Length: 602
Image (cartoon, rainbow, N blue to C red; front, side, top):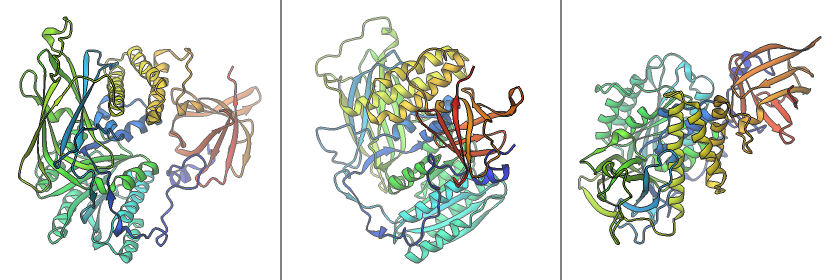
């Protein structure tokens, strides 16, 4: 069966588009994109944030595909990193890095024992001045193995075009590629108008082939970084692009993370860009444990523009190293959760004090923060909460870190006081995000580990109800994410008959559709039918003497832009119109269209 496009041509249309818009991955015009990038200076809005994984895009991609993410595949720091959480201070930060503390009464669906939530905001004295990124010697290490064919490699090429656009005179670029083996693809070149053209041409020449010799590719990339950075006055950084999960378990000196740790001691940082594959909490923890390490996950063109447009200069600019934060609550209270740093980067120092270690703090366009939940201590669990004396803090917080390129340890100490009567916008935002993260983590654990679909549904339903009452536009994406998961858990737990006003973006596809007309060429014919169900099943019906008969069926995936008939190897764009009653399907170039209308199922 061929729907709109053949199996072979479907593979060529693995690039996603928004609705029925023009192609999103067109090669940028070399002359039109030239600009005086050497004059770009960031002014007045540099914040600080933790390194590690900015992996929330993987979570959103899984939900868009109507899959339930595993609890080990998303992190609190990934969710927090997508928002700017600016906790204000009454006095400006006078040193390279500062902490600012504020608290609210906790009301967390999945953590009912939490009494208070403390927000620790990140500040820097660079915030109110002019900041210009140092010259950058960038070594791009590109996975071109067979699994990168199609969409993953298209995303990498587009990302590299954005990199070239954001590099400026004084910067240097080289490209190493690896499949069965590693090889130099672009010798180190200084950025000039002429060399931009050369770099774009070499990017276009990258094609997928072979297996995945990732450690060989990274080893070669570090060799190039060390050699090209010897006489370079500025930052040297390796940027790894891959759809595979790196071998995080190999800590041998020649293993993935062993090489990263050794290079970090030489001042060479590592940014990992994940495309099209699971990058879970284990990798987030491992990358975050390496000085100079950070990770981003990209699904589509929108993510490329966000990561390489808004964040490029910041993602390569380290601010401080070896940051340690010790949190000691008042007697009668214990730390019941720390959110914004991987579990393996924190631990107990005694019965009440928790120490958090952040190997790297980066400059950022968004204000960073982490959050600490306090609950009654175990011996007081069945007693009324102990009152906090007037003027006494909830917790004391101590800070130590090393500014970039300095061996001198700087320190600070602050107190986190009980909540004021007026909540700040930053704490309202932080509380809602921690509520979302802890609820989704608990619900997905109930689904995968405990096989308790009722509990999973009740948790996500409670979160969806809260978010539906929160009209802040900052939560538009969080509402869509939660509503989509609510639909899936409702189906799995037998709650689909319950009336709900909210539907996920993908739910508009569910149901039976009949072909009304065809514009251009298509193997679909009028009166034939397509059906999409809430459990990700697809059916194709042909007209028969007795009505309609199933011709083909299988699983499908979908996001806001495309439908993927996975068992048939077919991909096409879609748009739902006319108040949800018309479905338009298009091929990759939008020359052939099929119009369907919704039928009531009997």
